[in-house]
Image (spheres, rainbow, N blue to C red):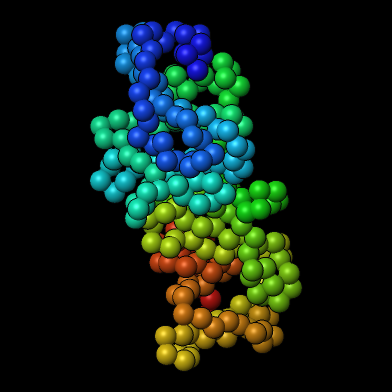
Length: 265
């Protein structure tokens, strides 16, 4: 690490204990915060030395409601946090955190120049912000439209998985579940791709047992099993998508971004 910093023209490098030494548990028993100057500017990088392979590391930076830079490091979609924290960490009065990793190292720094210099020096790459469950999950082209619609309203997605609702409208259709970032109050949605538009989709809700709601579904005049549960659901439909959103914010974002509306009853 010291040699890589020297190649990156970082001068006067020193190392102190990392306050994120808990991040990967026993898989990274050694860590440290390396600091120095580059072109007269003070900078630092938090480095974790991985002694066991960790599959599925993702890392995302964002802004809190108060405008503070926050970041979340996850392993297979599970955020690495302490106690009841909603994010891994925060940077007061600084820009976003940048990340790089390999099978031996995980690095995070608020200086993009340092991150970019360490990439070739240490054989690192920039980890994805989104975890796919499973990691080999096929990517559909239309997923980007859904992500853009959610991001347009400030909704961050941390995980994309296979949806259990792929046969909800009768025939099996390509579907994905989009799971919101920690601290966003259970945001997300199941989204079905309508390769062939449906002419008539109807959904009606009615009270069921205490705390539960039953949904009846009719597609092209055919009565389908529907569903029943305690979770709030916001159904939406358009010419290319059918959505079961879990919260009002996600529903509003997808309705606006994808041109959807609530199905008639």
